[in-house]
Image 1 (cartoon, rainbow, N blue to C red):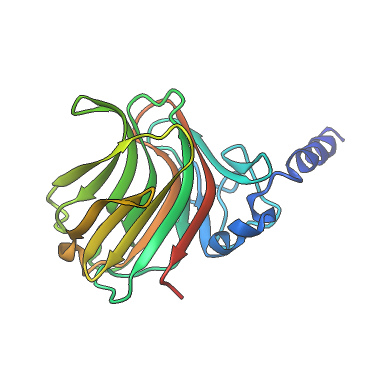
Image 2: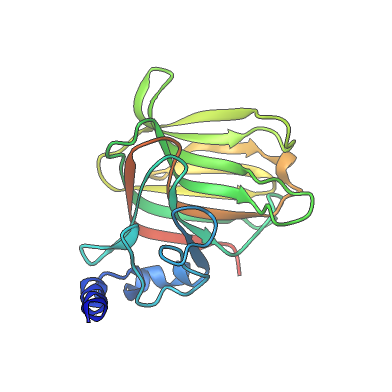
Length: 236
């Protein structure tokens, strides 16, 4: 009986708390899976591709009836969407990831990632690394509370070279960010202003990639991201 009461309480608690109940998120959720708290499937907190109807948990939920929330605590823990559709950087028609997002570093100690381009490590001769991480850093190069593009500068698995580009101070409110790939060039726009334009990523062209969005902590503490919009373009 106690288990039944707990189940009913849980259903009532989250009945109107599911991101999929909002039409603007359905397209992206139909082509994504949720990875939490690690990349491997966890029956409590992970979701298979497109299986988001009536689903929420403490790391992924709807806030104020309109914002898709990702929340996580702990080093190397994440609550992220992994988009299923894959592409290569030499794609001739541009592919892009667009988000309108508000960040809450909370007590994150050092850094967390909220957008990624990641190589598909399950394919032969691939690399289990992201080409791009868009991150909040508490302090870096004497700049506090800024957003950074962390770009892997080599396709060689044994080289750990990164280009880190300042995208500006973290906005206090919602801001727009768009990642664009076309003809082996990477560009990033923040609030309609190019912060990265035509960065050469041809060294990455042999890999298949996918987009990710959410919260992935690089150190201790907790962080949260609210998405008002999230969309991919250029992929069928």
